[in-house]
Image (cartoon, rainbow over all chains, first blue to last red; front, side):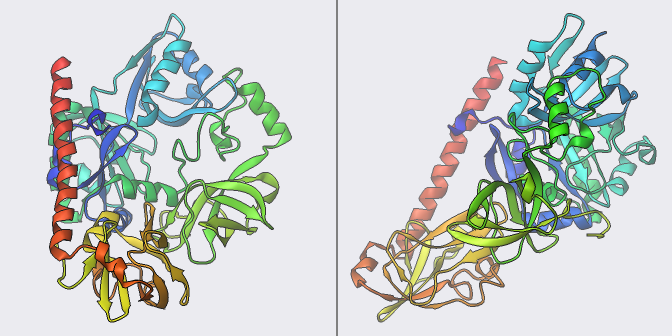
Length: 367
Length: 149
């Protein structure tokens, strides 16, 4: 079983650093180095470095690339200027989410799509199947490593390593630049709710880049961060995780991703169904929950009110930043209003929870 | 890693300290290390009966929930009141302040199935070795795959 797990170019580094390794989406990945809470708080207060090389990369190019992307996704890819990035969703014919992705416009008619590790093969097959003759779909996942440098100190750590003016790279923009003499795509994007960058480089350069970043960041308190804290960080910010908040049976309108779904686009997979859903309203909605009594909600726990089943939890944890048990879950729409109090069924016990506004955590401490 | 003398240990990584007819129960250093940061502990009520090999409570890390199995049968006399508000005490001091419950033994023969510190140390070493073996095997596999490419 374990023999077939894939490894990133940094596997040996993680083992050497004493990381605890776990299976995730077919990969053997570091779940923690020192401890999830310590790593989580380091990213919020200073900076953290993540190996996210398990993520897939698929390039779509050719004269028909824009039309192709428009047809298969929810967001408006035509808005992307060169060197701009966009959060987007691959949709199926029913408006369900095939994957949530970031699309980078790397050339006039070439789009670099970062996809979830668990979906890389599925996405590649889906894109290839639907490709027109004037589009080339290229699975480049094995070529690239990806490191994420996240936290308030990220820019201060990264700037001395590159001649690129990081201040000129705005949110959801990127540049091709050398970082510590390693050719990178440097994007101001992330999955933590903090300022930061995601760096794509050739797999063979990953070790050099990893060391250069850790060394440059040491004085600022940079730590390597495992998938455990990656999950708690994204959950506090209410970023969806595919397989939890999103899957092929869930539409973006149910998932609170109407802002990504540009129904004004003339034609794309699932558009008619989504238009109808928008007019009629969705039957269920993704909500944020805060538990009012001790306990922790976990994925697939039932949500109920007066003993009636009204939904389920999709992700839950104890928030290291807020010190409270928080969760995301789908709830029937009539119950999905802020301040409504419902029950989470935790191992045979009913624990009251309040529906709260998302995200749970916002940079700058407003929440 | 510590394996204090005089304690009895279960295969599910609980420890038992016997004093006459009462037993204090907690989880071992190995168990807390495997779990990581403990953020919530679920304990039975005083007076509740626990049954050997059945879950009597749970410990939760940020990542996951794990059952804690009763190493012996008995009636709960006392629970560690510190844990609800300070679950990380189990990480800090699993054999001391991080104890979980105290029970009155219903059958002292239950203790015969438990390991002493030497047996348990060996058992943990075996478990670690098994983990390493799996990793070594996958090392080989990976190399072969690489050559194929």
